[in-house]
Amino acid sequence: MQVRCPSCGRLYSSFIPPTCSCGEPLRIAYDYESVDVYSWKGRRPGVWKYRELLPDVDRVISLNEGGTPLLKAKLGEELGLNVFIKDETRNPTGSFRDRLITVAVSYGIPHAENGFVVASNGNAAASLSAYAARAGKPAYTVVPKLVEQGKLNQIVAFGAKVIRYGESVDEGISYAEGLAEGKGLYNVTPESNLVGLEGQKTLAFELWEELNPTHVVIPTGSGSNLYSIYKGFTELMEIGAIEEMPRLIAVQAEKCSPIASEVLGVEPRAEPTKALALYVKNPVMKELALKAIGETDGTAVLVGEDELDLGQRLLAGEGIFAEYASAVIVPALLKLAEEGYFERDDRIALIVTSSGLKGHYAETREKFSIGGTKLDILRLLSGRVMYGYEIWEALEKPLKYQAVYQHLRELESLGLIDESHRRGRRVYYRLTDKGRRFLETLSE
Image (cartoon, rainbow, N blue to C red; front, side, top):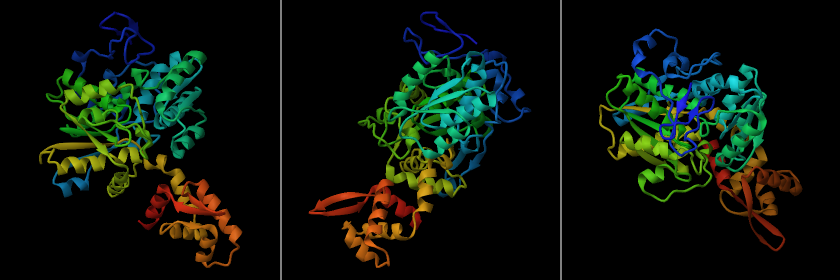
């Protein structure tokens, strides 16, 4: 496969960056006139079903990714709308990134003499770890310090090397590029190499075959998935399969909103969010994502931290356990429906990008390891700040007050309580936001 820059004529083959060295955006294209979509009908579901619109490879590294179910949402019936959920948690490693990695690894094998590398918030790293293991190649994963434990567990289980670098994935992208050059690794980071995005665009092909949606609601961090879906639908236009593009709707957390804020004309924020997979402060693909939203007459929605649990619970009611970064789609749907954004005959697809099993391991572990005295302490502190001896008296339990201080230290190390203030020798403790959320989850 070769991609020629339309501006300066430079050729790219093994590695296709989003933009040429001259600054011109690059795009992988195919012989669209020769594509026969009817030939797709009899093929086995999955990413490689659409091989005419994927890079040529000598060896396919696959774990049967793609072909994920499209479920009619009960929530849609309550809203009086046609709402469907594309459940990407059913992919081999539990996220949409398996579509990207199967193509990137299959294409990259001839160029990956010493293995592969990816910079990732977690999902692409977990996926690369599995597919590189399948290919018999080493994998290096550059992940930020803020990453869910469940994703780290996957990476370690598949034998990949974990490199913790930076607070968010933004810092890791350039680090992975340097690592690739220095160690002779093939870089599959989607913000650095367009090849893998060709796999992600198969989401659009499946949505067209199953629903032909009028709207697609997409959790958005770096913008790579939104752009991939956009590219898939533009190719369906090229081959004459559709006459009109669906509207693409980007959903971001209020606390980290570089793309959505520009669409909505509000001040952007770049702070850590519970939806960690959406914590991308300076998305490399921002302009491409904005182009996709603009050209499809789409929009964007911001979701607050206090809405993430609601989104997760409503998806659980559909039989899907999604991570917070995926759960943003439900509050977004509710907001748009309330504004009258949709027509009754619209066909709305919600993309659930990743499983909650990846994002809540640590929180769940805490839930089951904290009991008895620690729970009583948390409940006492939910009412007011208290100091250690006061807590010991209020517990009315046959234990030494030194034991209470041990419980307090452990709760503090878990981030469930912290020091409020001091008065003389007395240290007063209070419940943190995490501690309050923890108690709320126990009462649900």
